Image (cartoon, rainbow, N blue to C red; front, side, top):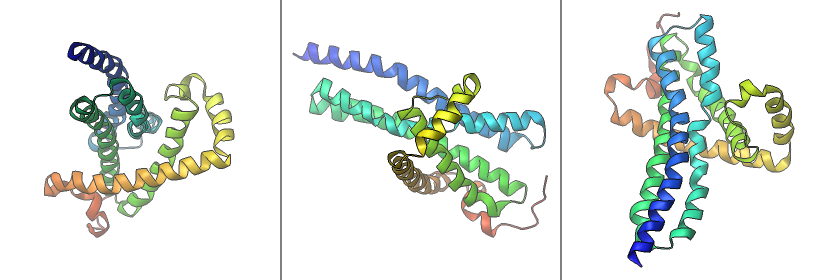
Length: 218
């Protein structure tokens, strides 16, 4: 019985590790781009704007991991062992989901740092809300319409036509609205936790409105 249970857990983990690794990789692409765009570079060049567009195209992949909790339900039904679910499965899912969302949080913190650096600190909260909305739409497109970030390049017409048509319905708008609220709420909490654990000198995102207004523009 134990051997059968262990074999089933290994099988489930092997299946999950493939999509978990891939989804985390996609989530960390915008994080890496945010460091390059907002911490190491100055805007204005065509290369920067290209990177900026790619950043927003891939950013929904980070909060998208929140919806992967649906796979946990299927795995619980498969394993049917309280101890294994509690000690192995749930911690694994929490680690992956929190890792993806933390990539989202740090990406936006870096975006806010850049806005502060160019003297646009008053735009930080507006940019965050707009980004939450865009990512809520992206998450809906990914989960329900099965679009991915590559489709913006391979089939942009389908993304725009079918994607826009679908979100105009009542049910999609409700789902997007709920996703937006969840993203905004979790981000508000995780941003403060992240900045609270970081060095005092990096608390730009929270104190941006009270920072020196003489920050030079680029």
